[in-house]
Each structure stands twice: as structure tokens, then as C-alpha cells.
Length: 115
Length: 110
Image 1 (spheres, chains in turn green, purple):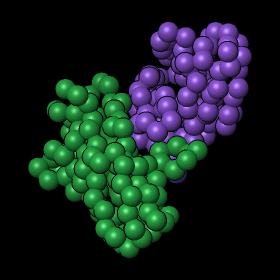
Image 2: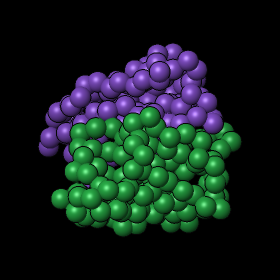
Image 3: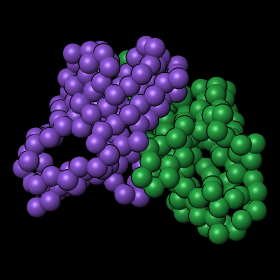
Image 4: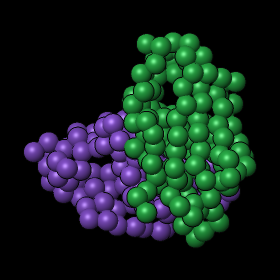
């Protein structure tokens, strides 16, 4: 198992374009999180899945953001009509619930730059 | 609403100078408190999970402790390679989301 994998690592896009990121969690992990992180801040919760069910979506997340996890395996995060304020690191993490140990393991992130 | 705060925001230490980082949290019930290390441009790396007040975990020069309202990450005789941002996070129940604090940026000067 190689850990949580995110693709692409870097994405530069023009304002108004749509972008999609992919996350492959650790196999057997049924919980998957998406976070956004800007410079000097901690990861900000966006949404999470338990298997294929999206359990919660942050109130801060606009309708331009959508996430899916078909079949409870990999997940995609799509941002429509990107804005400069969307520039950030997008992090994916996975864990196994229920378990004695519920810590989440992170991927290396996708760095999005909107120009 | 669940909240996690960390102090100080930044800490600069001389190599070998021990210190502690603080994480304060407000949740109605705590399932777990997590410490992560994050290097620039990379994803957070898991360090410790603490589940109950009084619990302690150690790893090399790091020791994490937990009380009912806060956690401390003690760094003993730090080395330059310990320089990173240290993040604290909490989970209210096993089925709840994990909420992060803003982090403490640690610099260890040779």
C-alpha cells in the first residue's frame, strides 16, 4: 500500500475554468476527507464520505464545489467557474471507521493556482 | 461549535532548547485528539492520537499529553530537522469529521 495518492500535484488554471482533482485513499479505508489549506492556516474541512455516502459538506463550501465517491473507492473534487480565491492546497485524507484508531492519513495535496 | 486553537503561532528555538506547544479545544465530547507534522508544500504527517485525559504518547524527541481542555506537544532537545508546522486536530465521535487548529510554526536554529 503506497498511502493516499492525489492527482495532479499542481494545477494552474484560468479564472472561470472548471477543474477536477482525484484522490485514491488507502485501500480498506472507508472514510475519505477533503480539506483546503491556504498559506499559514490549518486545513479547513470541506466534506467527507463514509464509503460512497457524503455525510457532511461545510457551510463555507459554495455550490461551485462538488465531490463524489462512486463505489466508495476513489473520490473526485470538482470546482466550477474557478475564482482567484480558490487558489489553495487541496488535501485528501482517509481513515477506517469504526476502529480503535481513527486517525486520518493525508496525501501530498493538489496545489491549485487560479490566474 | 467545535473549535481548536494553538499557541504560539510561531516559535523559534535554538538547537537543544526544549519547549512546549499548546492546543486548546472546545468540543462537547472528545473521541480523539491528533497531532500532525507538516513540512512546506507537503501533506500533514500523522504523529500521535490521544483518547483520554492523562494519556501520554512519545516518539523520539516528541511527547504529547492530554487534559480535559488542552493538549501539549513537548519537544526535548530539538534538532533543526524538527523544524515544521505542528497541527492539532480533534474528532468528537468516531463518525464525526476531524477539525484542525491553525498550527504552530516551529523553527530550530543550529
